[in-house]
Image (cartoon, helix red, strand yellow):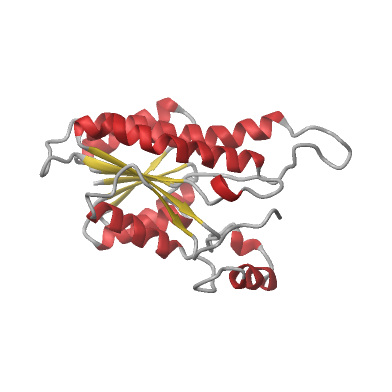
Length: 248
């Protein structure tokens, strides 16, 4: 069974759908109860929704407890995240708002950490299958490497996820749990869908190859490949069509 945060939309929902197609039972975790219930209904009997706030450690602990009551958790995928656009100082010289920076760090980095630590707690209790007890997949971003102007909070949060990947994999190697992070480029998620079509087209044209926006299904395919390939561990994989982001 897999637990997917941010499972009501975007990358999380695409991953959940791909897992269900392969016969894996999925727990969708999200703050949006209406979207989460609707997504679980569409995915059918192999999907269950649990309202979850990844920033709240009690909420994540309860998520894992409920999931473990349905079946053994073998996979945890963290897709919940937010972003803002704010410079270090604005045009009037005012400093970056602390609360907005804190919020992005808490949701993206601390939320991923909560999923990682509570997920590992339950994965470690599994009977090993060929020496392995499960896999944890985190979501970073190429902004961790190529953060643009106005992306201080977002790039810092995703850089933190990149940084914790290897030590987490090393920590959990003794109990047979793998940890891998995906760093997507420009993905065609609902947030990007709010942009004008000409802007979306320009973004797609900026990708070296293939010249298109990344799809949630591209992310899902990579998540399935990570699940299937048990030699992938402690790695951060860029999923970006060879894109390197410019300063702005």
